Length: 191
Picture 1 (cartoon, rainbow, N blue to C red):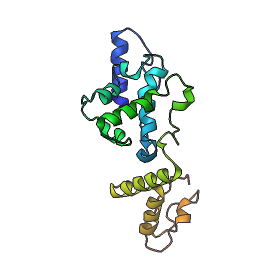
Picture 2: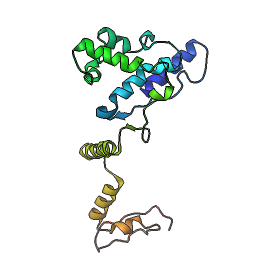
Picture 3: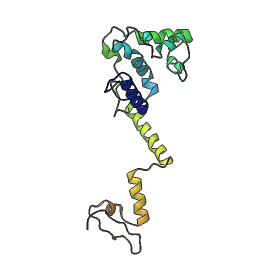
Picture 4: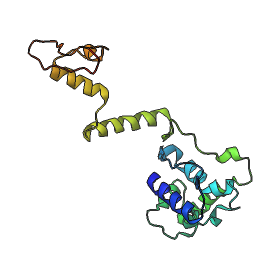
């Protein structure tokens, strides 16, 4: 997305003889705890053009998926049933409840639908959700061949037969090994 945004900005600025940012902030993606925050995030996204005073009603914003929710017209990749599934009844009742949820706060104090709080600019969720997401990420990284520094140090220590603490110690000299005949670790430290 960042590459797309950058190339669009360059093209737009060239076409309109401008310079600088086209969009206020760079693109960012957040991992959302859908069980606890999906509705809040959905409402925030749909009310963004209203908050920015671009339109007075979210369905009037041309680039929003909100109109597709209300009219039931499909957009590739859009799955409103995930959001609407939080409401009871048939599709018509769900749409009415969702519309009230989104539009019912228009005109009220803005705090009611502020941007959901992000943690470390990566997550929207509680501490338990963040811990689980990090654990899944670490497991996937190991499975995909991405290793932590700790794991690399452990592997080098084992292969080179050098204590981990000796590896970490500053000023290691070339040729010092824990065991005679072990491979030598060359240090970048000046001799």
